[in-house]
Picture 1 (cartoon, helix red, strand yellow):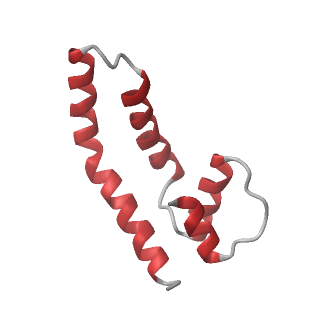
Picture 2 (cartoon, rainbow, N blue to C red; picture 1 turned 90 degrees about the vertical axis):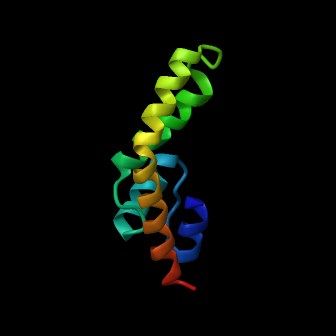
Picture 3 (cartoon, rainbow, N blue to C red; picture 1 turned 180 degrees about the vertical axis):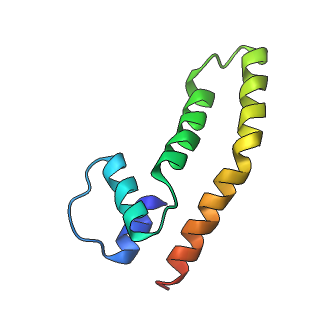
Length: 87
């Protein structure tokens, strides 16, 4: 989604790393907080890599993710509202 938003805004400059893209998105107002997005991304990574066969750890991760769901929805809403200005 983020590369599409950058393309939509015709932002200039080479953004080769993911963090460069996030920083640019925050600078132009498409993303509220790079720090918040990195925390959400870390949660996603934990699901993919941390003890996928341990039900206790997975349930703890699910509970943590459930608590962060509102933040994810806020980020999505922020990006959608930003992108709507370019349509």
